[in-house]
Image 1: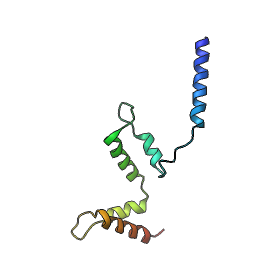
Image 2: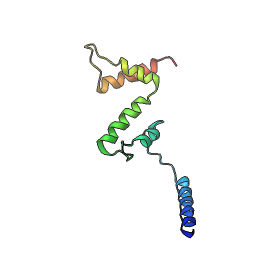
Image 3: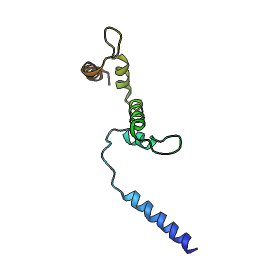
Image 4: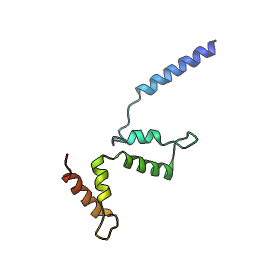
Length: 101
């Protein structure tokens, strides 16, 4: 019975410590923390390395606002290929700015 009480007390105190922990400001994007918490493999372990980077890139792209997503789809050059680099950045900036609010 004593072990049970100590185990319950330990869980309670550790949950208080976690609840009082300061929130990190590393991920400031709106969906970044949600993506971070969902970066789990099929075995329930947190993703790491290239797998995590790939997952985060896809997750953040999926949580992009509709205007930016629409502009992303329109970012094509004269030859029908997707824009890249500075041309894409410039196009996206102008497209988002010109989009109706």
